[in-house]
Image (cartoon, rainbow, N blue to C red; front, side, top):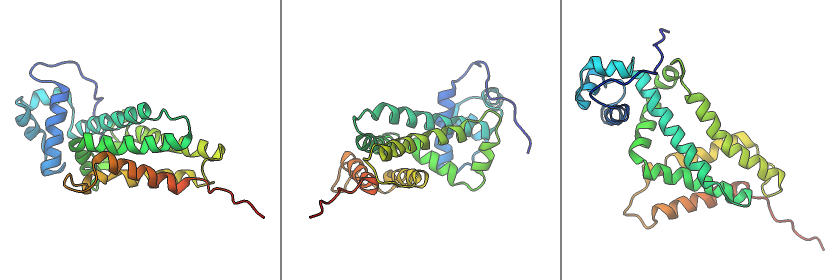
Length: 212
């Protein structure tokens, strides 16, 4: 596979990286990654294609930086939220933080899911030199694995299989914003808390019964 040049570039006049990323994300979401061209992104931003290539050597580099930004923001939200005194509280806080992040960053979340829904994108972005996507995804899963592992050790959780359970909980959180309706009976916060309770019920240690 042909490799692109490193993504770090100096500043060029006419626009900014955040603006380019935002406009590209909108196009990825509206027409799909495959149908979005660098020229279309440049036109959307209001710069020349040459100026765009100064910032990003390829469309894949642009997609990678967007995806990394979403993952970093999600990790930051999770780390800030998990301040509970027990592992059960930390798990509930992590679940609520994930779901509320997706609600609050709904457009970015839709673009993220759309990019990974394109068949060849995961392989493509993983081969961009300097891409941190795999590492960031692993670190995010490790947050949940750490909570589960410590909860088991503390006797708060059952002896669950940590890795598949972490993925199950994360996957449960991922698409809540896709089906949620603001016209429904539950608020976003209530839906997030409901899923936190569901996650906790999956792993919570059963109370021991006294034998007579």
